[in-house]
Length: 266
Image 1 (cartoon, one colour):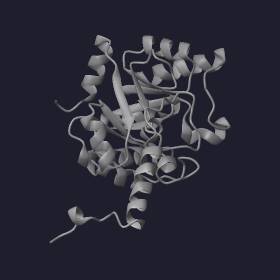
Image 2: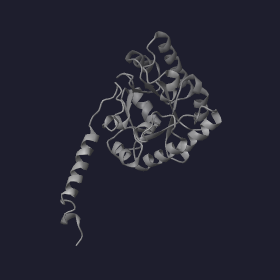
Image 3: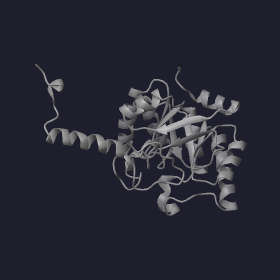
Image 4: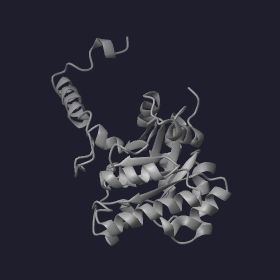
């Protein structure tokens, strides 16, 4: 299977296929996702919450993102790897944004970057694409803006806010974004944006009409319990399975069952 590229994203949009994405933050899980046939892996700044145990994504640094992205690209053979621009890695100016985005490609081996925002990052997107850095934009619920938004709330519920998001979707497309992530917006708005744009939309809580879907890996496999968004579908409770295995190991050691001769050298 050849490596997935932005051209494959656009082709799936044109042909009506669905794009599959998931987050990953380390070598083992990235390898599993890649071997499972996922189209694209996002090394999300969500690692701050699901890996580092932070309350939100804001403290995550560029160096931490590069570190985790390197692990992911080392594991992946086919999926397109996208690095997530963390808080204050691009908001402070276009030149710094391009430099930080370039680190994902140059140092970490990613194929593209993702940035939260709409009209306010149009100039950033233009500058990055001119520098041969593909950009996935991200509108709707943008976790780096939780203080302005007043928490993790569904966006675009009023006619005014829906029209604003639709306008921003067109702006990021016109600025050169190769795809657009839509987070926590009403199903009808997700459908309308997906129909109007020529670039693919990736939904997370944006309904089934988007051109693709993404979920956080730890939500999918049951390793994050602090809160479970409405849009999450858990496919396995890996915490429960891991607890069983570790408890069995503990019991085997305390009972003298492990290690046996089979696990010993002669």
